[in-house]
Length: 470
Image (cartoon, rainbow, N blue to C red; front, side, top):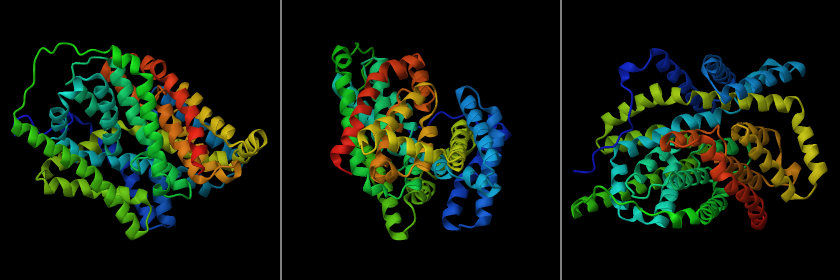
């Protein structure tokens, strides 16, 4: 139907992709396959295979990384190697440490496949038609942008940022700050609860909890996060006025009806994939992370074939392997090295020293412990260290009961700290993407526009968890 042409991300021609990048994409992709093998066919041979693939990825990718990620990765790697050698850690433990973040990496690699039906199904144009008239109302524009990023981010991850930014272009409200804050905060609060994010995969793989035991508490915190964002930006919202449109878009009733049908179809897709993951976890007894991997690999294929978009699926799948995965390589290598460093941290007995310090300083003062842990994530994020580094150290080396916290409390604290500090961390992909899309200064967008929001939320989070009594 007119106005609802298939929307696809702009892709590079296949012929322009270097053969080295194709091979690199395939090699990195084997990390996800390795994780699945570890879960289904555990054994020494599979452990060795996954460790060798991880090591090969680190050796190949690291020399090509640039900027702060290179500095942080090299520092962590050298420190980890030094600690391992100094404490005479056996080779088997070296290989085991390399695999620590393989769960996180697997989710990071396969979840983008869930976005293929969204790209190929005409849903973005449908959303634009349905939301067009209300997008010129300042409060709806802000909260709608934040909420839509949040919902789409559940399965599209950072892909939701570009899509929602396209939708905001249909509005006559032209405020880079409002767009950036609404998208950024809508996206990071998804990290609190979405099972499709690397943060959740890391927490679930290291703590004795289930996703269902924390999801409602985390969603409650996400709602608080979006309301705080709305209150903090209401001055800018009230001051924003739509500029006069040069052209007026009009669609007939048939197009509106079809667009509403497509939007309903989109939300049905989001609900069905989550239901499929939970049902498979219940029926098989395997971890929710493994079920997410299976659903991410198979469900979009079935959906596209059923929708007669099988050809588009294969095109997008190849683009993900040959283009998308190589573009994620610096995050992948950082995740692997952060896991390796956390293994060295444990073998160097630094984890016991950290536990002793927390017990001595804070004792049974749980709020103090929470503020301390969250503030470390915050301060390191400000100087360019990705939250993954500190959170990996926490979740792999700290036993929550030893510092007076329940596993559920500890999990939500880490997820929320990771999510919130994403907004002020210049090193995160979402801030770099938004700065590029909106043509604004990275440090202004991340730190200046979000510092107050982050501080307020970091104060709220521990009190919220204490009030819940979990």
